[in-house]
Amino acid sequence: MIHSASALGSIVATCARYTYDVITKSMKLFVLLLCLPWSWAFVPPARQAHQSYGTTLSMAPKFDKSVGKWVVTSEEEGPEAGYGPTKTLLLRGPKPFFSRVVTPDDYEQAVLKFMAGDKCSREVAQGNMDRYLENGQDWAFERLEAEKKGRPYPTYHVLNQKQAVLTIVWSALVFWVGFRILAKYFI
Image (cartoon, rainbow, N blue to C red; front, side, top):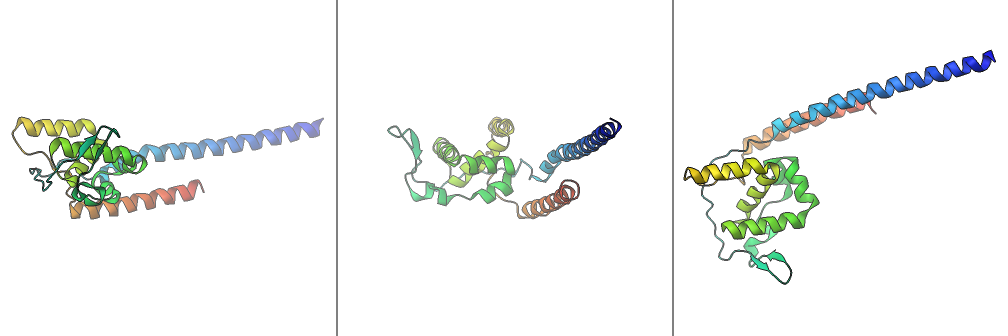
């Protein structure tokens, strides 16, 4: 009887130690996840120089009622005329990037609709969609402010080289530190 009680005590002690380890690791992971929003500090600022759209489009995309989708009418309106997902990631961060990669058809339709509505180039439409997907309320506010003050709309498709380099360096540093923490405490 005493032998089974000591075995039971040993099992309880092992379970308590395991529970303590799990709780400790969970708390460390929770603290790490709390630090994740700080990575948004490395996304380029939303406001950039104002310019007019200026477009070379001869025809805007058209809505095809039979298919229920926007269609391009020339090559300069197609996806190859714009920029790729990597530039979206550098310009606006992970939120619009993942939205673009996960739902490419919705993204394409939104860009074509914006091009038709504002009569702008594909890059300008992509920049606006990326900004909208990043933070729709700020995008709408910035456009309304530009209209009120009679200024051209903000440009969101121009990549600031210095900001891109800083973003890449800081992101690499954050990921390296995060990986080191994960490797030390969780792997």
